Image 1 (tube, rainbow, N blue to C red):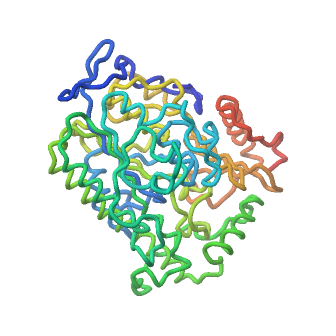
Image 2: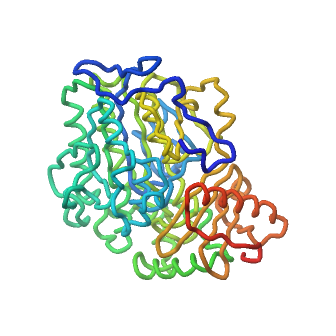
Image 3: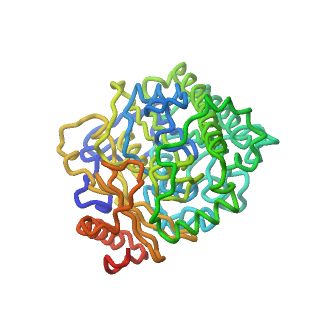
Length: 483
């Protein structure tokens, strides 16, 4: 894999397990490798849509009940510094299945997506060549939301059998119910697959749409259950107020999006709290479906040999900074849940130290399956962290992550251990710096503080290195006067 995004980055987490990409025999779960045989586990990959990292009771949130997600946290490792690559559906999802940054594939937004180039290694093709049965249920969105909406030679999902969804998909909430009508059918397709006998290891993706339905809530609140009394609504977030010196482009986007899509900042406190309640309600709805999937897996013959990975494509602002939905570089939109449950039973663990990314999911899958990790991958395997192997590689973990937005507002974000640096392509105010240790709510922009000049320049240099290594075209400010 390419040594990028880091000052110190781990090398291939599959050292000593270089496996040939060959098909397994009908009744074998063993993949031939150069020096050792690797028992190939089944893999269940569960994806939600628009779930921010703290929208789980396992994360300490008292306003949402997620017993299924909590059960995963109880049997695996939950990461607290986990980020998407781009806080919008299509680019982030493309990264999940390729371990590449969106701009490296020419995928610049939901609307600018030619699909994954055929010469790029992707999840489905890699695992199919390694002898896996690969199956995808639910949302795809690279580029069309569901495969049935695509036409032409790339109308499927590369390397995957697309599981048939019985019933309507991707319609509005009033006519079809939760998950735009697709989540119950996605769940059923997943359950049906787990009921089938398999003669080889499988990679099964269960891609659910909620809590994305919150995008409809401000326009159509009457289509949701009646909210409870004000005394039982979630409170406003501690960082509800918009910061004073926010970048010019962010202010413009805030005004445009709030007016055109989801109401205005003049909503009452009760309306904002009802919005947060509706979001948590949708999270609980999707959690109930995940519960069905986990129960079926536990009752199946595959329970003791399945790697489970749970994440979301991006987050949701949920009222923080008086913002809704995504497309922002604040924590609520960029940090996403990530729980990994190895096939071998382990104790529950929480990793609060390492910066991890959606880029790391595919390398982790490859590592457990004995598949050689392609050099093109930007991510690294999480297996050393999961198994606490004494190889020294954890000490050489990445020092920072970079996120991007390439839509009408071009933005880059650098997340280091303590700080977050955000820079916009243009505007009178272009930069933000937050000390996430002392200001986790990102309420005080330190970019214009002369005492933080060296920190700003350090993060600019991190971004310069990343821009060079990934052949990005973003242009950084030349001097601190650009703040």
